[in-house]
Each structure stands twice: as C-alpha cells, then as structure tokens.
Image 1 (cartoon, rainbow, N blue to C red):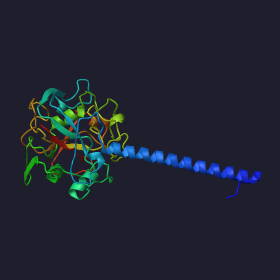
Image 2: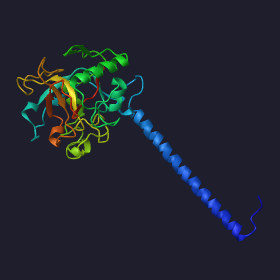
Image 3: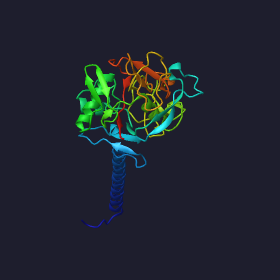
Image 4: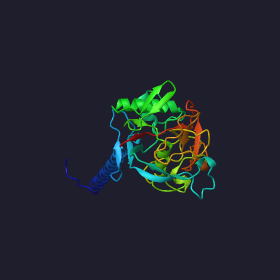
Length: 307
C-alpha cells in the first residue's frame, strides 16, 4: 500500500483510524460487560463465602436459585406475636420460648418451578417462570417431592407414606418440610422484625400492595438475617404441623422441638403471599388448609436435618 500523499488521502486515513478505534472501544466494552455477566452468573451458582451453607449435590438440571441451603445451628428463640403487634390474632399467642436441639439446613429460596420440574417432570404452576416459586401444590405433593429428591440424591427419606397416612423421621437427612417452629426460627433470622428481615414490608415481600396480582422470581427482595429470601410474601409455605383444632393457638405447644398435634384436619402454612395484604406476611401470622388442597397461593421451601 502506497504512502498517502495528499491532504485528502491523509484525512480519509485519519477517519478510518478513528472508526477502527471506536469499533475496538466498543468491543472492549462488550467484553467487559460479558465478563461482568459471567461473574454475576458465577455468583448465582457459587454461594457467598460468609454464609454457612450446604449445596445440593444432585444430578442436573437444578435451578441455581434453588440449590443453596443455609445451615442453622440449635437455638432458643421466642415464638409467636410480638408484644407491640396490633395486627396479631389470638392463634399467634401466647408468645413462648422454644428450644430447637437439632441443627438444620433451610433453602435460601422457595422451591422454584425449575427445581420442581427437574424432579417431578411437570409444572403445575399457574404463573409460569423457571425462577418463580412453584405453586398449585398440595401438602401431599410437597411430601412426595421431598422423598423423590432425597431418593435422587441418595439420602434417607424423611417421610414414610401409606396412602394418606404420613409419618416423619426428623433424624433422617433427607429433604422435608419444616416444623412450624423451625420455619419461624428461620424466618426470624436471629432478629425480631415484624416481617422476615425488616419492619418495612416493601423491602422484603411481594404482597397484594406490590405484586401486580402474581408471583415473582425468587430472591428479588432483601434477605433476612440468615440470608433467606421471601420468607415473607410471594407464596405461602406449607409446614409439617397439624393445626390445633382444640385451642386454635399455642396453649398446648411444647417448648422443646415442637412438632404440633399428632393429628388434625388442617396442615399449617406460613409467610403470606402475593394475593394477601401485609398483615398476613408478618413472621408470626399463621393459616391452614386441608393437606389435599392445591392453590396458586401456596408453595414450599426445603429443609433438612443436619445433626
């Protein structure tokens, strides 16, 4: 290529050089953005180093949002409505001390549709989205899922089933629903806020006021003190316990490792959800339904005994 000899040729060459610089700058910016995206995705798969967690080690595919579990050590906490809570119902009382003697792991997020489908081969949810919580699942469906995931990963099943009769083994290391006390301990996050992680509902929960009448992808709101997301709002979460039909409150509750009544008509669920107002998303708020009931309002979260 000959050397430029005229001012016009030199000007054209400068324009070409300028265009090449702009193109190269654009490529560097794109590469930088790609590197940032890769790091972000790595962050979803790899848990933060400051959390004590168990990572699900099973056969893929698992949603990265559902593969992490936070370990909670044995503890003593106050269960039930806060003294200054004006929205508290009688079934949230009396406030009482509870001692949990087992350590357990709890899902950082509500069970997602991606995780459910990878285990069950179907997706019953009304509001579709792989990182949205699974819903339209009954209490029995959740028990079945827990046993199948445990079997998939070679863990001792926590549940023995015989038709509609279900018994649990809390010493087994397989997946299970939490007891109601374990759920509230996890939701409290070592703190005593009105909602799970804050006294400001909008910081931590999807409820009637902000949900646009639908569920949302898990983990979009602020976590609580244990690093758990959506313990208030999004979907209600089934727990193990029967509702106490005799008292409708905690009058008969045990103070150490309570598991609820031995029988009943309704199973408890906790946490509130997208369809309900803020008062239902309070940590102490409780509700119940027949264990065969399926609704777009209800999902669940994985727990496991670790000691």
